[in-house]
Length: 115
Ligand code: HEC
Image (cartoon, rainbow, N blue to C red; front, side, top):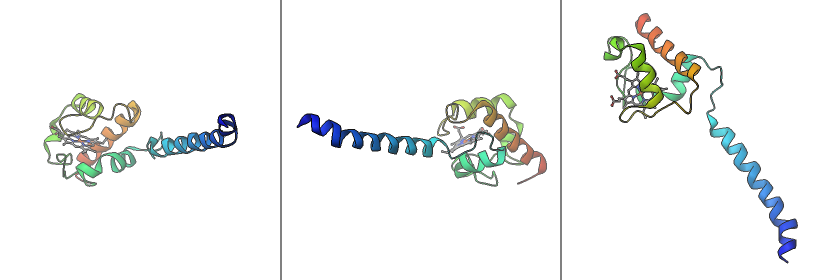
């Protein structure tokens, strides 16, 4: 009986479970293309707390006229990679390149005077 279960029922069931969790994992992976540009990364990962126009909400404003304008590049890298206070860390969910691109996007919006 136990053997029948293993071969006929449990194995296919296990397979379905493995496939299901693999597709779920792929789904949560990020939904963000490896080569997504800074704006796409910002809107997908940052805008929920900092707003699409960078004016701030849960997180402080990052746009023109904000304190973030005077922060050194290193401060951005450390804050985004390691997190700070309620700001989550992105060191394990974004690549170094993606972090560079999202910083460049924020700095470009600051220079342009808005989104
Ligand atoms: C869950 C909300 C949340 C998300 C998502 C989030 N942040 Fe933040 N962020 C915060 C909070 C809160 C702070 C303030 C942290 C502190 O000073 O204690 C902050 C601070 C910052 C700062 C420093 C600002 C300053 O002037 O000190 C930068 C830069 C920043 N976030 C960029 C980003 C980027 C880029 C992303 C997306 C990759 C992002 N944040 C996603 C909540 C968030």
